[in-house]
Length: 298
Image (cartoon, rainbow, N blue to C red; front, side):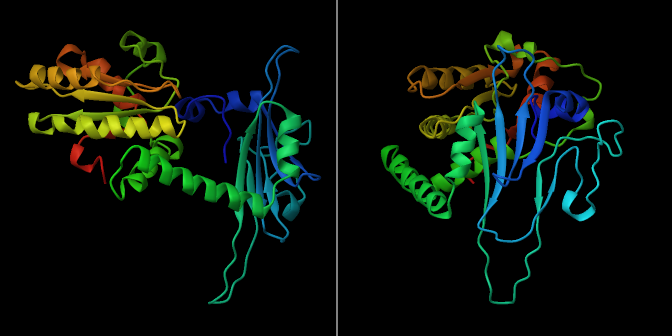
């Protein structure tokens, strides 16, 4: 895992920023890798992230930006004076499991985020296989309750969860077509979009596809019930029916009210009223773009 205090693209371009802001180390007593935000002053907020392998009683190698596979080589990347390797923020556990054809090994890779060290330490100390399995079952039960409450068709929960996973965790590959542009997050603000949370852009180019708005609203209801922060942008592509498509979807969205569980909303934009630079901006900032609405549900 690579902890970062910036968005993905900023981290790729300026990784040194996170090296200055984040301290990583292995806590032998807790048997966990820990990333700690360096405080600028006494009033600055704390932030801790930990990773831990659970249910693997094997010797492990660990790696941070200042130690490279420390148990194998016992050689530090940084000795306090000289940096021997590029210092790139990373939290890595490595171990080797040899299994026969019919053997099976189950383990859990746990990630936690906490606002102070006391809460983090308490959570790690109380971690157990039984507790994790109990939480997993609770998550399954919550999915079933949410699906029943929202009257979701069979299979939609799996589709929605996969889409949420893609928005939150999958990395977006850099595209050469953006290299000649200079974008800034503030360029989104005139559309009332902060840019602080993942953006899903759905493009609609045919009038017979406007009915997808019902599925988009249902997906957003599911997202909010799962306490996930996501913005959805519906982009009407320019053609002779653009205004009619916009009006139909606008009326449908005006009838929708979401419970204020999380941040995030549905925004409707018409390409005909946007500059080429702004259209390219949304291609750049969107974590995922759906151009064929028929693929939205699968």
